[in-house]
Amino acid sequence: MDRAKDIARMAQIALAIEPIPDKEGLTTRYVDCVDTLKLEYFIIGGINSGIHVQELMEREGKGTTYDILYKCIIDNHLNRGGMRVNGPILQFMWPVLLAIKYFPEIDCPDTLLDKTPAIMKETTKEDALQYQILHNVGYEQWEGHKDKAYGQKLLQLHRESVYDVGYKDGKIREDIYGHPLEKLVWAEMLEGFRATGAMYYEWDQTKPYSVGMLDVYFWALDNLKGWPRGGIADLMAVVTFLGLYLEDYKVS
Image 1: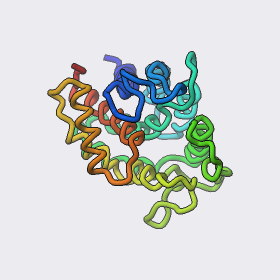
Image 2: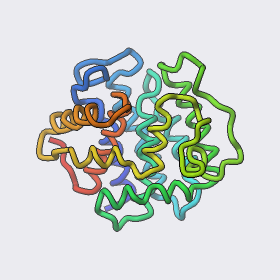
Image 3: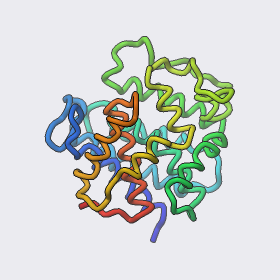
């Protein structure tokens, strides 16, 4: 088995099938929530991402990797219309992919996710720059971002890591991008994916995919305070990827 190709394949599956369950207010197999967020765009974006996930897994050492994520976000748009669809999923998934890359022996979701804060601290200054660039690109590709009161920011060239972009003195920075959900996103990425882990353990993998994931979705709406529907859907893709990787989950 080619491990890099296999992990890329699992990431593609998780990204491509995320929108399928019937989640009210979002794109699903039954409805496109808006014309720029069609089901086809999610599927194509997921397929386009695979080559860059493979590139990440094949890159040697522990140096800069967010240059690959930047390319992944850009190439996400190849051969499709629309705007940003699964860029936020990829931003969530990247630290998890790094944990898998650096600790291939780990087969426990809690242990794997617990590795991510230290990994984010060990990212490079170039990673910090690349993250800020891809974040700005993402905001420009988000159709909900018509009000420029928040969004693109001048690049902070002195940040030493991606962790340093979002965290300082034991707490989330107050001056990042100004979006009201930013603290939730940064806390998830830099504090061990607590919401993702909780959702993972709520997932009944014996049920058909759309049924089991819809249960997780409604559980998250009731229990993850402050998380919007779209953010929960993003985490659902990471949960699916973890099931594919850790438990050889088979979609039914």
